[in-house]
Length: 155
Image 1 (cartoon, one colour):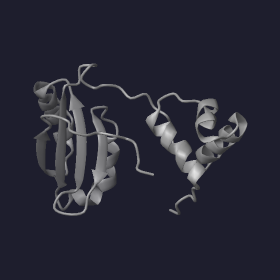
Image 2: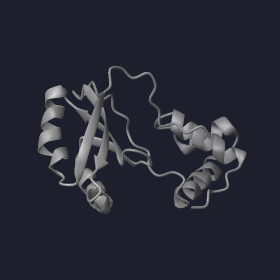
Image 3: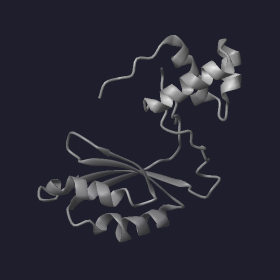
């Protein structure tokens, strides 16, 4: 995939969109010296090019009762490796799985999972995750505290 060519104005717009929730084209234009319409056109162009995917609301997981975060390293059996796409499809249906990455190395997937507590993770593990036939091993690491989490890209 070819990267989109961004000038310094595009980068300023993207930085403001990432760091100031709900900022509008008028406010961005005011901060960077563009008219509202020129700024809106640039934002629309960035959306059309796929640079801006969406602008989601960010929730505090603990304030909504999701107190446990787990990173799970999943290794599939050699037979299961032929079903990488099937595993990815199944995992994408689990709302507890926030992120799923295919890895190179000694494990096949890294999952970021959130649940209410350890008991809920245990239930998720036995009733959902471990039900996939091709799993050889799952190593789970419970997050004790979060030092840094961001969705802001360093552009």
